[in-house]
Image (cartoon, rainbow, N blue to C red; front, side):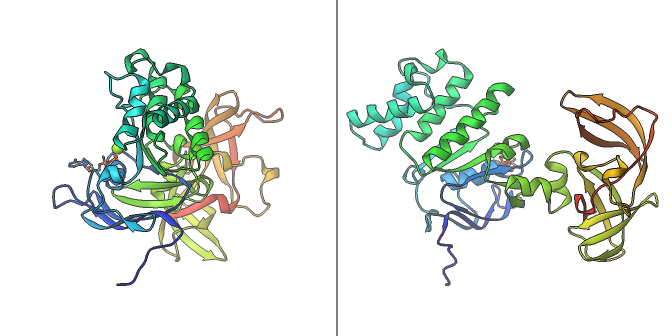
Length: 366
Ligand SMILES: Nc1ncnc2c1ncn2[C@@H]1O[C@H](COP(=O)(O)OP(=O)(O)O)[C@@H](O)[C@H]1O
Ligand SMILES: [Mg+2]
């Protein structure tokens, strides 16, 4: 059999499938290849198969079909504790009867590391998460954020090359969650560890990751760096799932040189970038970001198609203005504008014309 392993890949899933009941596949055809040191996030709605993938990588579940490799070696038959993988979960999973230092020492004892080396490693790991003075306390004596830091230190204490995190910040409040996002990312970068991170929170995925794998129904819909995912979604699901998008439906009437002309169902014509439409007559769902819509005619191409719009609502949000419009029969068309000194504040009832750069309006699958 041909050796298909990619030599630069550290973590690899090849044609992996998983069924729990022998009938339904909850992971359908997973292919993924990660270089060492990458921070990759699996992002997707609940039930899309993210945790299952992490559990197969950790060794707590076996793949029904396909191959999972770590450092070029198939790990299907290596038990979890021999895979050298650190794990962090949402519910911390610290041992309540042990002190913080004992919690961290435990994975080192399991690995038969001597006492003085254990103590040095525990101290270093606690210092790394700024919990150096808490070693003598028990988990119940710490706040949620502190417990999560300890859980992180415990996953890192035996210096794993790979760390898996499943919604580790899900139980924390917004402010602490945002602080921990930066801390986890900084620690991972400093140590050069490879991280597979799972979340259903798109902001978290975009801010922390080198690449994001968008999951839906047991498949990866798109795997790309955050900016590419946001700016060039490959299909309607990704466009809808990542960030906010205005969508309109219509038919392709012209297509050439990387440009498409789409006739909306109400008859209006708009300029788009064909993403996954290829021919005239095809139905499409077009997708445009609220911050890429322009209503100042001076900033639009002279020959750009525009749409008439009525202002329905103006919301002042401090840094930005969020304005809701009626466009081509859609009452939920949102535009966002920066609160700049010369920015007009639109008023409900006003009639305007909107447009955009054709490359910002994506013609996707209907
Ligand atoms: N241990 C299990 N036994 C049977 N079905 C499971 C088990 N774990 C998960 N599932 C099912 O597999 C699908 C994917 O679940 P999961 O991987 O937990 O998704 P996610 O982490 O993306 O929310 C879901 O339909 C879920 O109900
Ligand atoms: Mg899950």
